[in-house]
View 1 (cartoon, rainbow, N blue to C red):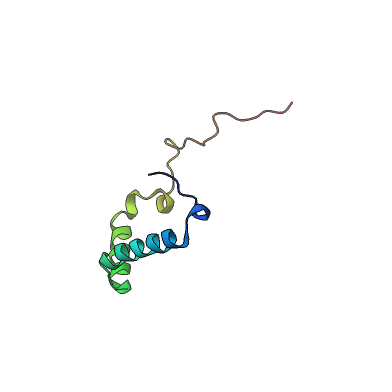
View 2 (cartoon, rainbow, N blue to C red; view 1 turned 120 degrees about the vertical axis):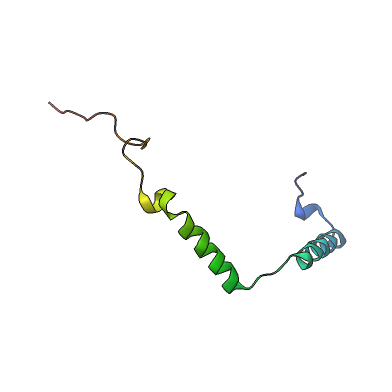
Amino acid sequence: MPVINIDDLTDKDKALMELNQKKLEVKLERWLTSKCCEEIKDYIQAREEEDTLVKGISEEKNPFKEKGGCVIC
């Protein structure tokens, strides 16, 4: 998709783009926030055991683990 510089468009072109965007948004299926929150919570809890942010990174698989120490003499 080509990049469009909004400053180069006429007012009519801008209004047409906005109208097309609104037409797309009207077609979207809307859900209640409470339903979305429940689904997100269930998704997170189902994958909690494999989540590295919750569980942490094991020492064997940690790519940022220091390979060796620094010795100052």
